[in-house]
Structures are given as C-alpha cells and as structure tokens.
Length: 320
Length: 292
Image (cartoon, rainbow over all chains, first blue to last red; front, side):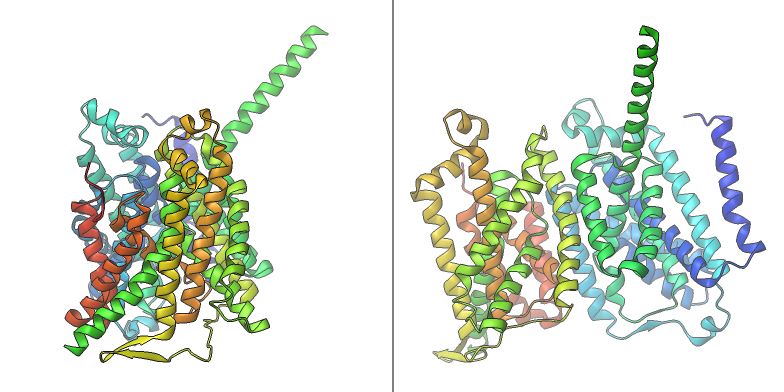
C-alpha cells in the first residue's frame, strides 16, 4: 500500500520527463502524434486490464465504450464547451452505456460474457453506422488553430489519472474483491464478497476510462471519415493484446504492452509492412501459451532463474 | 402475402447457412470445451481454397467441397497439435475456454493478415453460370446457390449426426465429451479423438466457407461477422447440443429476415443480435436445450 521514497522519486522523474520536453524542444508532429496514440492505448489497455486482467471478465465490447465516449465528446465539444468538460462528458456517457448494456451482460458467466459484450458492441456499431451515414467532422474554425501540444497534455493527464485510478482501485478492498472474483468466483461469493456488485463497479470504472480514451481520440482527430471504424473490434482487440503481452493483472504490464505494441508497430510497419501484424499475432499466441503473466511475468521468472544460477555457482565455489 | 412468403423463404435459406457456419464451432465447444474465436477466419480460409480452385482450374464450388474438406481437415489436425493440445493440461475447464479463446484470437491476427498479404484485401466471390438464377415455387423465388447451400447444410448436418450417433468413432467422441478421463481409462485414445474432431470442426468451417463464397462474398478480414453469427447460433442451440444447431440457425435466419419486414434492412442484424442477447440472459441454456 505504501509508496517507498525510491518509487516516488522514480514516478516524479517520469512525470517531469513526460511533461517538460514538449515545451522545450520541438519534437515534430509525427512523434507527438505517436505519443498521444500511445497514451490512448495506455488508457484503453488499463481500462481492459481492470475488467479483464484483475476481475477476469473477458470483455470483448470495449470498442463500444470507446466509440460512445468519442461520439459524445465530439458533439459536446462541437457545442463550444471546453474540451476538458467534453472529455468528462464522454467518459460519463460511456458509463451510462455500461449501465444499459453492462448490467444485463454481467449476469453471464465466463465465455458467455465475452460473447454477449461482443454482440452488443456489434449492435452499437451497426446502429451508429446507420445513424451517421456521412462523415462526422468539426467545423473549419477548429482546424485553423489546431496544435498537437494540447492534445499531448490532455492525453498525458488522462493517462496519469487512469494509472493512478487503477492503482487506487487495485490497492483497496475492491481490488482484493476483484482478484478474488477472478481466481474463484464461487469461493469469493461464499466468503461474503458481493461479486455482482464488484463486477458492476469494475465494469463502470473500466468503461469510464474507455470513454475518456475516446474523448482524447476525438480531440486528436477532428474528422471521422467513417464513424463505424471507431466502433470496430480493433479497438477492443489491440488493447487486449497489449494487456496480455505486457502482463494481465499488473499495473505496469499494460503500459509496457502498449509501448511495445505502439512503438514496435510504428517501426515494423515501415520495414515489414503488413507482416508486422503476423509477428504480433504469433508473439501473442506464444505469450498466452507459455508465459501467462506476460513480459512482466517472464522478467520475474528470469530474475528468479538468474538468482538460482548465481546461488548455484556460489555453492560450486564453496565446494571448491 | 407474397412478401411474407418470400421473407420466410429467404430466412430459411440464409438460416440453413447460419446453422452450417455454427456447426464447427459447436463441435469444438461441445466436445473439447475449446472456444475457437478464429472460426470465422477458418471459414474465410475455406472460401479462399474454393475460390482459387474455381479461378485456377475452373472447378465448380460445390464440387470442390471434398478437396476443401481434406485441406481444412489437415489444417485442423495441425491446429490441434500446435495450439490446442498444450491447453489440455490446464487445471480447470473455465481456464481452458478462456485460454483457447485468447490463443485463437491471436490466430485471427496471424491468419487475417497472412490472407490479406497473400491474396489482397479485395472482396472475392465465385460467379458460375448458375449464379443469380432463381427457382420459382408458388410465386416465391429461391436462388439456386441458396438452395445449394441449404442442401449442403442439411447433408453435412446429417452426416455429422450419423458419425456421432451411429459409428464407433462417434461413440468415442461422445464418451470423451462426457468424461475424458474415464474414456481414456476404458481404452479410448482421447488424444486421437480430440485431434480428429478438431479436424472435422475446421473442415466444417471450410464447407461453410465454400457456400459463403458462392452465395455471398468473402474478404480477408470478414471472418469476425461470421464468427458472431456462429456464436449466436451455437448459443441459441444450447451448448453441446450439436443436433439442434441447424434448426437454431433457421430460427435465427427467420428472425433476421422477419425483422426486415418490421424495421427495414439497415437494422436487421442489430435486431437479431438484441433478440439473441435477450435469449442469452433469460435462457442461457439455449432454445433447444433438452429438459432433464
């Protein structure tokens, strides 16, 4: 629960490193864009991590919450309300959506929950696709004073809030309940955990975060040529991949996974083209099959092995 | 009256295809408790095999089914060997379902992009001499390819039914479904049963792909929408209730066709999915579940 001084120092340094550079040096729009996208991925993957990694409910409908937050933010912002409020409105809209579609689906267990949320996200995609047949875009005045810097800070702030929120949730009584539900729902229920209540809380928090991510994306991109694209399952699957590759059910895992996915895909997309997605898919399968705790888990295991090897040589030396 | 009849006819034709789409998924889930999210992608793969057989050698899609079945069966065996058999050592059924879901999800990524790279993202369809021809019965039109699909679906479902209920191998499958450990103690090679049934399941996906490429069209990333349909039909039929899958598909097809009459074409899929979710919540054991 308590943060040691060393940890606090590292976090403080990180925050400074992230906050200051854009003010001091010109990094170029491409890099900044990539960083904002990275923040969005971190928010989304933390959101999925909360419901999928900690609570063990595989939610395949994240895209619906993301898209809902995006649409609401877009239109609230269009009504000339400051973007910060618009983003919060987007998050709250995603919560409302979660109440409507999440409460019924949470009664489903295991794979049925996954299928139910997947189907509901598709329903949202179809309905939204029919409602907004034309391009959704901001009026020209918004494009004139477009600058990437405020996008960067909004993304950064929301990402920090997200990580802090997930940290607080998982280090509270609720976090214990969530992990108990993941490990054995029946046992948790028997020991007096109101599993349904906590699952609802987890879903609502998770969808709020996904809605915020949608808001940041709405701020980043002013026009959406094809609005169904933001509801497409890709927005569920890529965060899921980031979480699993990084390490589900840990705080750092999804961040590492997002960095890994966004940065490597940027590098590989230039050199390998489509093939980089195949590599990611294979990597994902290998991680799921052989290292269920992701990169984080493997680091821990390697460290363990190293220390064992170290002790082994020590013993060998003593024998000599 | 005519529109209603036509709607029902369309519903049955498309529903039979929906049932066919779900058969492989239902078999894997029923026998081994593997949830194969990549099912839709294998359907597309089967469609591509048929498409290239037609394009390169002019083999009629319905005649290409045996070839597709063999190819996809082999792919199924490989899939079992590489991806599914390592999951059998997981301690609980729930973990097996979840992990197989994640593994096959990675497989979607690999296969989708491999197919896009190999065969471009273009939408493909097979146009034979009889595509678009219809058969008129009592003022109701049936498309020839749709009828062909219906025939294939019924034949395949019957064949599966006979394999499962009348052959010795089917008996093995059913035994392994009920209790894998006890079955292996009785001298059944559970590993072989599993690998063969996963071959059959993938072959079934391939057959569905053939029907789809000849009646509709396929593209490299179109697997997900078919996966969703397969999911829906499997759950409507009830988990592990393979014989009810074709009827459940017809129910879903009629539902979808019927909602066209009520709310119009754009929302037909949405309505059908909403009905599905209602069923999932209130009757999660499926519409055709046997009463104990």
